[in-house]
Image (cartoon, rainbow, N blue to C red; front, side):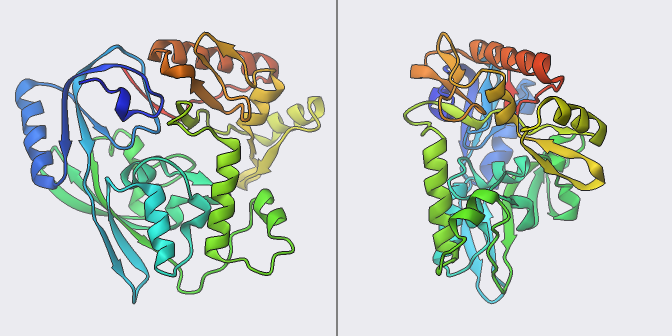
Length: 330
């Protein structure tokens, strides 16, 4: 099975085995097959946070298509299948007349992937809304429900990215929203846009975020990418002060404990790499943080090599090593 249609980087790679599952029973059947054949499974969501670095994936790739959207209007809670589109889930929540997830509009991928990655944008993270996560444990063949606290959310982090939770498979997610909505305009760009607005509603913010992301980021159907490719690095106060002396205009965001989060896109741009291209791999001309696969013609190794080039160049200039955000599948 060619995985090119299943990853937004449009990398062509063959999976030794491939299965799509729509419920728990199908999931257990394919996992049983993997155990019998001694093949390691790989759980695939929307493929929007993935870089396939091998021409042959010698694994059982399991595409999660578990659907479902159940709303409890009295509690403002929705239970959503892991295979549902995240963006469509945001839209459906707003269609209920609720607010909350609008800052996270137009982020590609599935609900399950959103939780694993703890996606974030425009001053919000999915962790703010997760009430619980239903997971399947292949080692015990049992379903368990994790609380928000047990998910151990952090910046682009969750328990599912640790050794302890990496084998758990997300089946469904409960999202809860405040009974009294208030606009999240903590992100400077949104604050400026709504500074003099008389209509600051969830729908208005949703539309502003969609417009902003459409301006800045390529449509992966037209220009393949995995969105923001690098995490914003977090540095100590001492390191930040040294950088600030050398680069007074450095873009940064203060964190607790005196730490500072640096804007990876700014670092890449200032390193002269915005719009740079090596063969079919490059950075997007409008947003340096996005790696793109021109014409879908680069293979995974070429994209990985280009990402390493970006890391090396930024580290040489700033002394900061960028960390890739996507999962690398070899």
